[in-house]
Image 1 (cartoon, one colour):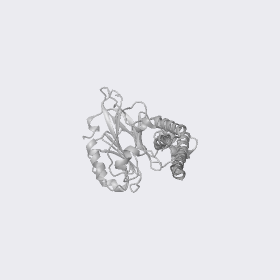
Image 2 (cartoon, rainbow, N blue to C red; image 1 turned 135 degrees about the vertical axis):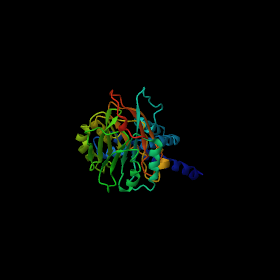
Image 3 (spheres, helix red, strand yellow; image 1 turned 90 degrees about the vertical axis):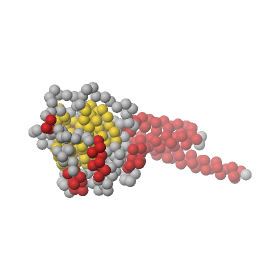
Image 4 (tube, rainbow, N blue to C red; image 1 turned 45 degrees about the vertical axis):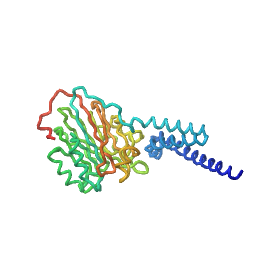
Length: 335
């Protein structure tokens, strides 16, 4: 009888030990992520802060269920604190901002995925939301026929990258480019910018596609881009696939260099295909982001349904304070 009684107790000790080990590893990884500006490897861990926080909350409850109260409370507290730091970027805004009789505009950000099997879905999304501006990454040769179908609605176009490059950037706009600005194209570092007139108010629109974090060369890329983004004329709006979460040291350094702030409430946007459509909105990584300088008011940000890419599209609604002049009607293409 004693042997039978000892077996459940032994299993309980083993479970408790495993939970303690898992909690310790998760807590160390989560804590290390706050020092990503010192060690690039730690910043790679930071991208998973939300997942680690949820893991600690779960293991904390399980530890308390196995009567390891102190360890369970500690794990839960660390997980809760970690979740607080990511909440503004993971969860949607409760109430959309309102524009006070100011013209509003929309921008659709999409990493198309160069080899997406279903390309027509992206075209249908553009037709449904009819944005003023579209920022595209991985718009290579395979996407040329579909992009050509948008020429009538988006006559203002700026490309960056070789046509055969899968990482090509494309900026499409219904609003006219400001005369005299030829734009900036840095294909090697995945950067494009062009000044667009929004009812007479010039805004520097930029696209950024960063490389993967450590052991990728993301930090070196950010360092090279520092002088470029510092010279952008405000007001500035930068959208793209940053391959970095909004709380990471990498994206915070990039935003600081550009004189911009990171737009909150975008939410998770990436998971490997085919998990993207059904799991990315809840358990993905928020690596498709938007940065804005002063002079641009963000009124709303909303992820769209998956289009065949492993990235969810992001629709941004914004306003630009009026400059007192009116853009000629010819500079805006009809929807």
